[in-house]
Length: 323
Ligand code: DGY
Image 1 (cartoon, rainbow, N blue to C red):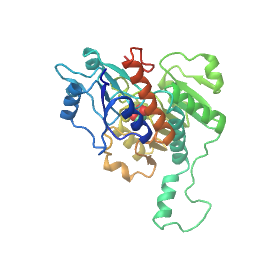
Image 2 (image 1 turned 120 degrees about the vertical axis):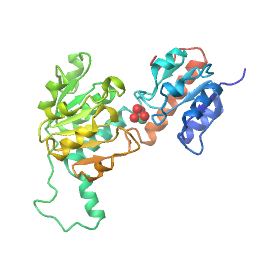
Image 3 (image 1 turned 30 degrees about the vertical axis):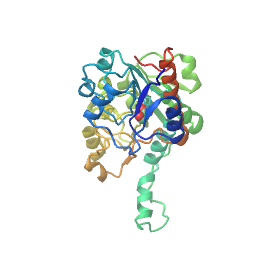
Image 4 (image 1 turned 135 degrees about the horizontal axis):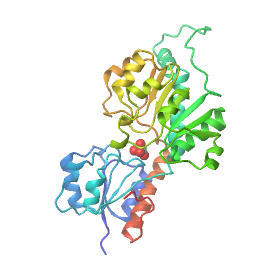
């Protein structure tokens, strides 16, 4: 029987690409060039499986194909708000993602951002690199203590819980969570956490707020001007979730008028484009979407996609189906 024909839309870790090529009739994107809308539409008529990433916009236009050959979109990443799920369903396409395997690394990066913002690490590094450091002094780049402070976590899924573990057990932080559904008190107890009734109730209580909810239209601008105003003037906002969750223009206002102390972003509303005004804010830390960027996580994500493909093409329900 002919092997399923699959398209990998970006470069993946070598070990995973090699295995995919052994098991399937695989086309790799060795140039790592992002695919265009027309590339996608063509791909959906030529491949049994397309393996997209967060940089692929699989919105209604890309999925508007009369008779697609593609039966599964096996996404490389846990978030899939870049895929139009209604259109995928209309075509009867299975969609899968890669949960679990990146949770620890993404939480590590959220904690990195939290620490960088609180301890002004970006500012300090820029100063040393620019040759502007004039020496130690008691008032130099004084930041905020992290240990023992209150952390609010919005979205208490796998990554949110890993963040809570680090914050509570590593830094002795008090953890308050907001989650759509009620969290089992025994789980909360593992992180010394309590659940707030609403985001609005959580925000004024926190020294740090870290976002770990999904993106997509449901959570677009979840943190808007009104909610930023509920944060304390000495509090910090951390976003490793999705850019659209924070209303960036409102965040810049809050930073400009010091209604919050600072923010740290790994994700942006129009990424990879970043509003040039953001570069002027010293109280804003920015990283280029590095949440899962470790060798270990990126390989594990790839092998998780492979598991999903094997399940699907061997007639089983893929372990990470999301529709
Ligand atoms: C994820 O897994 O969702 C990361 O943000 C990369 O897409």
